[in-house]
Image 1 (cartoon, rainbow, N blue to C red):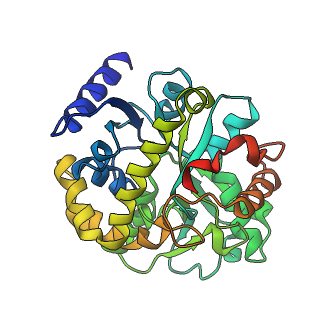
Image 2: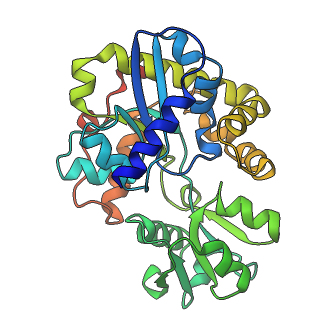
Length: 317
């Protein structure tokens, strides 16, 4: 992992080395391999919004998804993009991690079903593939219950990242996935699958991806946190107003991405980059309170996260 991290840090340094003299450097680790959800971050770097804010932002893909929070807690990176469920779990174990801005402002989780399943309640007696994330069972149970079905009558099987292949082969009736990723990929390859989004079946419209830092970092240098949020949110403002330009930024800085898939994913995601009041970055307390109760109800955590400690909303006001 150490060698992978060194390589990733070097790549990040190259990514941010173009143009301008800056006074501070900040590292930002993604939650996953670069994809359309990260377009605004890459636009912030490609267009120099970070340097105009007085920082040099180094964007680093994680060696593996769990490393995003591990390396943030260890002080190896300054900021990380985290799944909000991981933030809830970290908060419950007392980790020094706080959410400071929304990245994707709506849930991405979904159950994707074969065309014959017209409603989630029809999945009773069927096997649903899950990726193994802590939130997978909560998503399945919430969606089935929200459709009037009995979640106890739905079987699950760990399939890792094989949702697309397993659904295309017909091996499974349904699988958990992200509507902006697996959902879009399946629609391109074989239209007709039903995508049941979790916020359409009982879950609040919580922010799926959140920009996070340690409380130590925020306390020690609040101006750095504010400038990083400002630069990144400016990037997402471009993504919302001109998704084609933001997609081009992402594809230029991350060679090898599929432009067709990025374009389709970004078109699907575009509304999700704006918060309840229409602006990127928002952290709405009422939404977060509803989310905290949902996390407990479906067993992701045993007690509701304290919104006042799990999030710091001062940088998005």
